[in-house]
Image (tube, rainbow, N blue to C red; front, side, top):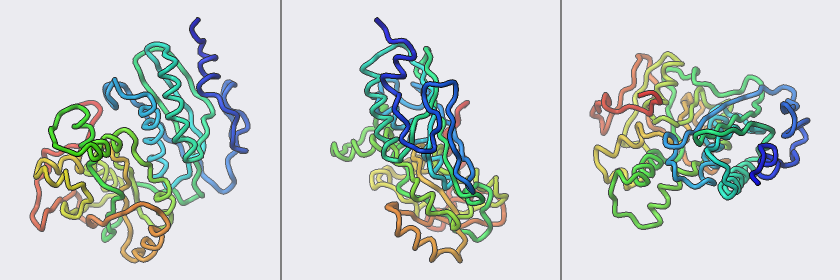
Length: 321
């Protein structure tokens, strides 16, 4: 006999709240949480659709992991601490083996970052996963896109373009003679991104603006420039990219610039806070690199060894193109 919706929730998603701030979790009409004094509530929501955001044959645990990771990345970009999540799960059919793997993937990342599932909804239809993440940040300390000023230095975390190469490998859009370990690395970067929560919190009071790189560096840095009313200059030779991407030549630059799905942070820092930034970075396990500078005049200029690079053909991910 097939599980009912409530039996499904009870079997795969119910857990007694581990947080003292959860007054009422799964099992009622709505969840109730206590918000710490002198903090602001930070909320984000992302939806992943089979065949759009992940291949339809992706492993269930990888789907769950990524659905939560991309939301945690939004919390990182705001400098927030993630606390609670809501899950909306649309399933084409009831598959208990799939649900078991999905719930394990979700739990593994939630436990790593201390996030508790407090509610949500399940329904039938094309495979779709929606996660709403809720967190806290000390009042007045949330990182925003709108604070960059001329002279600020532009930084990115981690390594860019890995997920884009992983997607091309997964879809067999590119043929590269890679050792199995390197191929697995790029696929893992696509399927299980690392949300930079510790870095985001370390940037509080240091960064003037921040964003996570979900749609590609050009598009997401562009959002900072638009929100702040400034321009920028970046240098391709300073981008942190894998040797395999450099080996692709000019076509390889489209991966860090516009492939997206890296979920690294792009942030700006006034030069006078450079020493403070270096001190904060020593407390987190995440390499960061300066790639350019904010300028007064609008627009984004891309240089390679001092020569201007035309980027008109480079576009970030767009949902409705």
